[in-house]
Amino acid sequence: MSGHSKWATIKHQKGAKDKARGKLFAKLIRQVEVAAREGGGDIEANATLRTMYAKARAASVPIDTIDRAIKRGTGELEGVTYESITYEGYAPGGVALLIDVLTDNRNRTGAEVRSVFSRMGGSMAEPGAVSWQFSRKGVILVPRSASEDDVMLAALDAGADDIVDDGDEWRLTCEPQATEAVRDALEAAGLTVLSAESTMVSSTTIEVTDPEEAKKILRIMDALEDHDDVQDVYSNFDIPDDILTTISV
Image 1: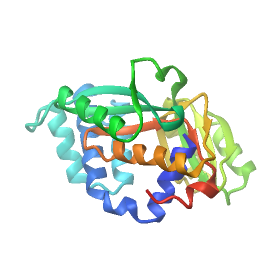
Image 2 (image 1 turned 135 degrees about the horizontal axis):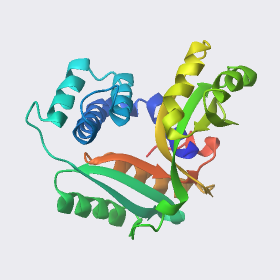
Image 3 (image 1 turned 90 degrees about the vertical axis):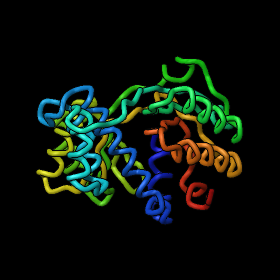
Image 4 (image 1 turned 90 degrees about the horizontal axis):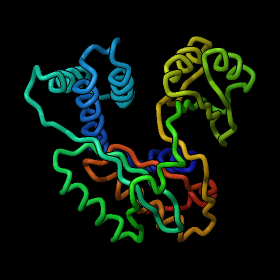
């Protein structure tokens, strides 16, 4: 998880995220719509919708665009029915990949995801082959400039389970349902929260020290994330910072 998070940050610094802004909006809007369809349009009563709403707003998706997505989800506006699917597979080097998809055409999306694996040196896996090592956690990032004592004092009472020095950031983990409470407690203490999300975290990591292999892994990650139907890609690679910062895929 940390390796993937660092790569996303580096891509943002290189400007790659700006180019994909429209694609990101489309994915977030789809997630809001599905959350409203499955749990109703009341943000206060639907925890998943509340999380997706906050995620969309953090990415600067306009409020009226989010509201229309909610209405499509609840049936107030006409919309498309999406199916949630999780694919599993391996990137080069045996790195585990878990891919969350929302699609209106299972056969098309499955074939296209399989094609990405085939073209980029990975392989699809049977259900359960890699998912056993992933569990859902709340992950909150705070700038490393904050005092560890201040971060711990604010976060532990709110439900944080662990705090780790992750280079430029403190990475806190908690149960997914405690994510909002931990974020709110940190902000109430005057601390900056870089991100707070419910995500899948692997219990094992694979260290990648070969720059060429690292490049292959990041290429397949980026190709999967670039697919319109793919909402999230989770992995267990750990690529050292000095390699990450030199890679351009």
